[in-house]
Length: 253
Length: 323
Image (cartoon, rainbow over all chains, first blue to last red; front, side):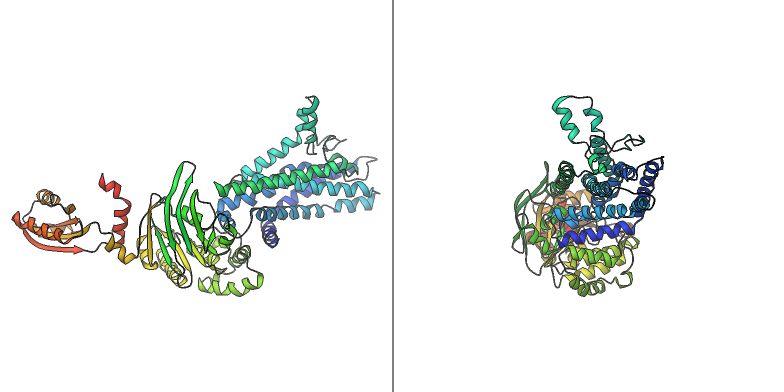
């Protein structure tokens, strides 16, 4: 546990010592801000963070891999992975430490964006249930996308490869309903079950980019479903495990 | 401290190290000498637990590098050839982090760090970003991270590669001093370095160990060719060389290229030659006899001590010479 926190603290410091965290936070706040404003500006609009959530989960498809792309690719490029792997550390400690750092950084951004909620309370009377479930869902969603991004970062020493592969996997999981819609039977159902939650129809004023059949829809509505929690937790666990395996395989090559 | 028994390592179908065995005792400084691609780095990566051997057993401090990798890594300080550093951290932050992931607690780091920084003379740069340091100072930072946690065994891969000559001298001094308290395995492809620092040299070529000795004894023992400097009067080069090569104990003969053109022109009739012969008494005798029989005037016959550099070349380019 001590090693995990040593690595996590180092990575968090690196995030905030470089422009990365600030640039990404600014972009995150700007984009989610647009969605939030659009969703509450209509006449008789509902006082909810639905628009904000939709913008956030859509942007995270690209933001999470961008945040994590450096974490393991750079270690390989600088050769410092050799130092990490010859230190008395286990692979999972390296992976967890880095994952936690990325998650904490993302969580800071989410916390910063909570002024939207304050705005809602000042000018409206929002339902507290969907607010809390939405933020819980967003955190789980962030964890899953960061795990995918970290896995992509482990694959090569090139950060851009990490970004493209990470966003690619997340995009594929996002547009999976585009395929499943055109199929029938078990295959269609199985594919549907993997729908990440965002939708590329982000400018549709009704859905604001939360996929109707996806795992995020219930969170946005105020429903906490065990299936959705299990889905995001599984994606997180599976991709962190894959990352550990990639590092271990590197040792055995 | 380090024990390697019949270790082989292949990358896919490519063998990097083939069936090597050696032991480094506690307190020994062993130099690992070989040309690029000989298997030095691979061997060090196996010893440090970075990569497992394909065959054979490797133990460090009694711990197997495969089954007790963590224990091995706790006892090792390692400086890889590329000197990996986080460029966006200060020297102090970097070293603190490296100490902590090596299992040091905060108070130990706090106590030990100033000593190490002093030892590698990084004092004035302790708060400089690693990315702003020159190559030589980065090397010192790399050495500092390797010794920070007071490891029993130090493994350094080409610690003086790519730094300027003045810093090379300083770095060598530093390493020599470290050798007084550590068991050390150090690789290099520069011979004077190894003979200056190490008490024992392992020469590796094409994945095999071809020599294992003290630097001083190495030249003596491995003289399969004793080098003799000869000057004769009145001998035509080709005729002399052929006559020499006909002697059974002579390995090779050639004109002495070390003599300058001026020297050779001035003393036209004194031709300097170098003859490599097997190290036995008869060789010199035979050579002298042949020269006299041919009616040449023998003016000089001096056995030359071989430098480690020549032995190294001899050892590692043997096949090419034979062709």
